[in-house]
Length: 153
Image (cartoon, rainbow, N blue to C red; front, top):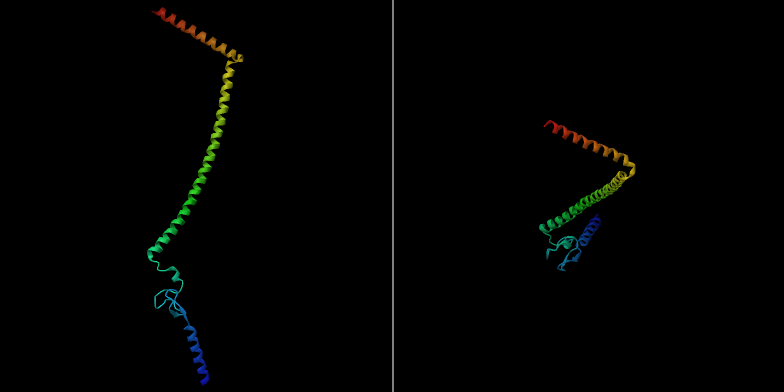
C-alpha cells in the first residue's frame, strides 16, 4: 500500500509540473504560467483579448451604430428599388396610353377630313340645294313680316 500512495503522489506531482509549465508573455516577454489568462507583470491578456485591446464603450456603440446604419441603409435601398420599379411600370403604362390616344387622334383627323371632303363633293349637291331653298324661303318670310308691320303703321 505504501507504494500505491507514493505512486499517486508522484502522479499528482507530475500533473502539477505539467500545469506549471511556463511560457513567455506576448507583451512583455517575461515568463508566466502556460495557462495564464493575464500576465501578472504587465497585466496584458494572453487570450483573444490581446488582439482586441482596450475597447471602450464608446467604440462599441460607434461600431454598432455603423453596422445599424449600413443595415438600415441597405433595407432603404430595397424600398427605393421597389419604388423605382413601380415608377418604371407606371411610366411604361402611360406611354402605352399616350400611343393609344395619338392613334385615336389620327383616326379622328382622318374622319374629319373625309367628312369635309364629302361636303365639297357634288353628291351632296342635293343637300346644298335644299339648304339654299330653305334660306330663300326664310328671306321671303322676313320680307312678308316687314310688309305686314309696315301696313299696320
